[in-house]
Length: 260
Image (spheres, rainbow, N blue to C red):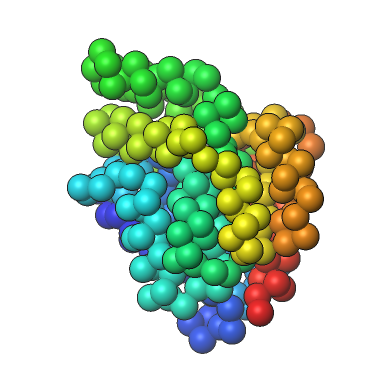
């Protein structure tokens, strides 16, 4: 069984810069393998972690985004991280780290959903139905995830590992973690405006079609902020760290260049 906050590291232990990598929902630390191996990040200390409730890791008592952000912030401090990168669920955790003031450095938010409207309707239905009628809708969705991973445009060995990690997810933990995530993005808050006000240099990366989205108002708010860069990947990409690792690594390198 994967342990929560287990870390996978690469790069020199005495590197000048360190990055914390938070995976997407249902994924483990090694979902960032291809990003970590990219030459654009050579010489950087990279710390990827498996978050609670993901890929079979125990969820613990607090599945909230705020609780996960506190745990991730402790990890960032322990490793002296200069930049935090998150994908999907992990991006929301990184967002909360910035908004709470627990992390004041650059953040890279991959495929983030800032509101309920941004998140896929099918996913929302599965999570809420699982809360009402039992876990079977989520169990059915989890059974389909490895099939989706097999169709990902990525390295065969990486695809195999990704599939293995997805199969480790436990339905009950996934329902709790995903429900807490949906509660967070459903709050009556303007997260785009809050991110701008927080002042962290931020990169918000999306595909034209893929995981997460931005409303026109959110995009306008973010693009108007001098410290925020919105990056749009052409085409359909659902697993940004797995399918376009070179582009993700380039964005992370830009964030590292912004470290004061």
